[in-house]
Image (cartoon, rainbow, N blue to C red):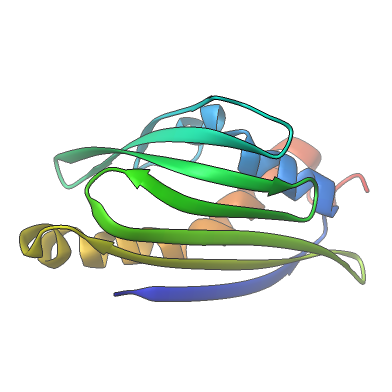
Length: 147
């Protein structure tokens, strides 16, 4: 199972970065492999999410439970989809001149074929996640943020 951990400090506030990650309806605007994202069953402490992703002509949909610690942490677990396992977490903490982002994802597809064909592509996309959100923050908040 691929396990990826990334850490980066960005010149934005934890709230700004948290808000970008929970705004999944906007993912198709800046994540090229994300075709659709939506939230449902929203509560103060969690929501269900559905994402449709497309890699190399293969289109897959999956659902997750996203547990929230507002402006601090998002813990994501699999509800349904092509994975046998999917667990992820975003953590945001204040840092000098901005926010420290800690990102973790652990996943495995149900089928051997998907693991062989999409596993490496999904791993590469996951490794680019923090950078994609940093770039999105720059486009929305400016190069040095507003916090």
